[in-house]
Length: 93
Image 1 (spheres, one colour):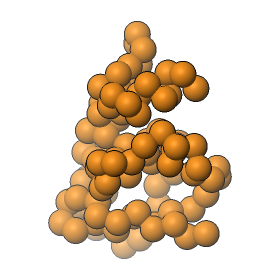
Image 2 (cartoon, one colour; image 1 turned 180 degrees about the vertical axis):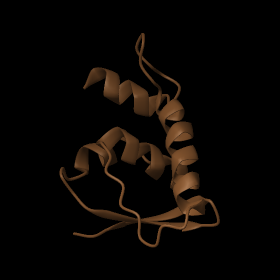
Image 3 (cartoon, one colour; image 1 turned 45 degrees about the vertical axis):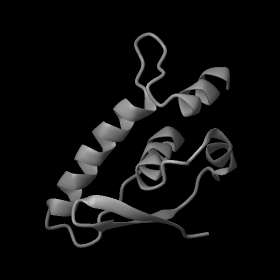
């Protein structure tokens, strides 16, 4: 939990051999762009909490550790994009 908290305080923080939340955010945004540009009608993506947090951080730069802790697991969300960028992460609870 200590390292997770630090990663939300500094999105460039990472342990040796790991990825920062900013690294994850860049990687997931590239993947989502490919999915959005594809001809899939309704794609489904499975992910872990830190990856979802990285997307939420791209949408809302104020997304913090306590919001990550409050996320349900497992859970279903709907991601809406405008152009190639995510703009809304809807909780389908």
